Image (tube, rainbow, N blue to C red; front, side, top):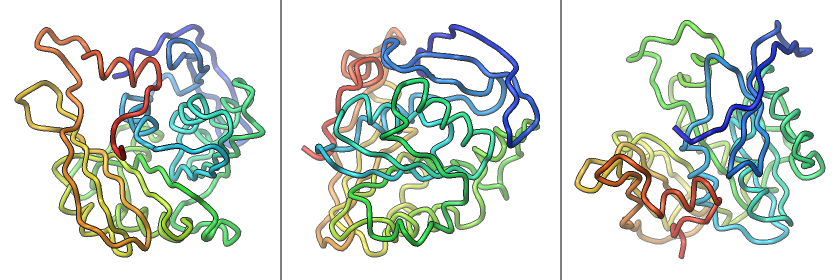
Length: 263
C-alpha cells in the first residue's frame, strides 16, 4: 500500500448514496488531499505508479477511465500544471468523492468528473484525448468471491470481457497516435496484449515486489493507430531485501517522479 497519512475521519452523506465513513488522507508527501471510503476500496500504490508512468506534455487532455476517488488524476495534475483531466466513474459515491477531491485541491477547473459507465462514453469525448489511463478492476467475478462491501466489490470485480471493453473505450476516446497506459496483474499480460486491437508500440514495464521475485503487476503503454513491435523494459523493483521501498520506488510514490516507461 501507499504510505498514506490519515488526518481526519467523518461520516459524510452524499447526494447519490447513503452516508458513509470517509477518511481525509494525503498523497505525495502531503501535497494532495484525498477523501476516500474508510472501508471498502482504498487507494493503493498502483494508482500513484500509473500516474507516474504517463509521459505528460503541457496542454494535453487525459481521460481516466474508472477514476474512483480521483487519485490518478490528482497525481497527474500535481506533475503537470498545464494539463486537463476528465474522469468517468460508475459508482456514484466514488464519483462524488472525486469531485470533492478536485475541489479540495483547487483543481476543479482542470479535473472534471462524470458519473457513468466507461463502456458507454459520451459522444463528445470520441477522439478528443491525447492520453487515457486505466486502473481497471483486477478480478474476474467468475473466479473470485466478491467483498461483502459493495463499493470494494464493484471496484475490484469487473464485468465479463471488462478488460477488452476498457481498451475499446480507450481506443474510442483517443486521438490518432494517442497513448493508452494501464496497470494490471502480471498474470493476465497475455489477455492485455490480445485486447490491444488497433494499438501498437506496446511497452511492458514490470513491477517487481523484490529483486529476483516474480512480478505481480505490470504497467503497459501503447499507441492508437501506430504500428510497431512490443518492448519489455527492466521495470521497477519496489522493495529492498529488508522490506523497505527502493529509492526509485519512493521517488515515484512520494515525489511523483515519472517512471522511465517511454524514455
